[in-house]
Length: 297
Image 1 (spheres, rainbow, N blue to C red):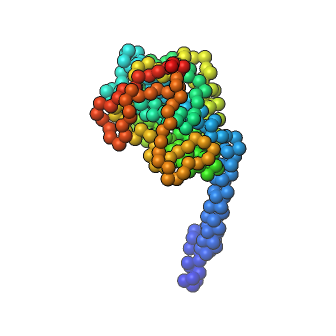
Image 2: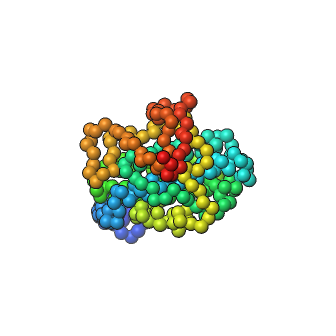
Image 3: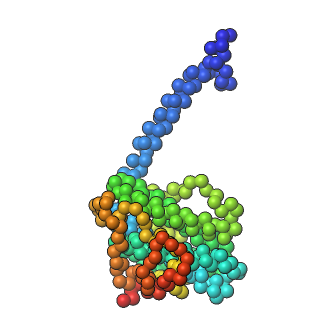
């Protein structure tokens, strides 16, 4: 057998190496082509079913729920209603997460998002008495929110809205951090147990339908009203608005050179800080939010 023959057939498959290499190259090219065709197709499908305003409205509603459920958890811990108390570190993390949800809410309201409801329901009251269940509920919800933003990005890509894709990623990245710390507090080891965020929904509307199916929106369980109990403390939160190019909630993208700005929130729909937010530095004794309930003047 010649050296060339040995090289051709020494593959353990019964097929010449040259044939396998050609096949692998063709397969790789085919997969790349399929992916190139698949992603734009998904984005086009999402755009057909969604529009920017619907996505903003659902996102605003989501963040109102985040502010509310985390406030309820902090209050239950303060009242010693849980079967095991939060550690001091967990109180600090949940306190910061609640403020972060409020900053998300402020931002998406500044783009024109409007709440679909200000009342949310607990699928079971045990969420506010069982410590592990509370943190598991939070980590599952954060995972859903990340998945909703993946769906939102498909629509934004199809509309050539790089500004909204950027902001959506900045927001989803922070929600992924919430999922991680809640998963850790719930006892998962390792808490960073997924390599890629699951794509649970093809549209943000499907995410909303999931919240309704779970009974969080429109359910029959115990009701929680935005913003929930207690004040919102943002003192340890930095990067309070998404950096980079300006973002617009309108059908047209903003100028790439426009300076970032934040419009005033509509009365009665946002929790407004009593001091101007600080950016770029954490810690200190920053302003404390004084919550206003939905509909207050």
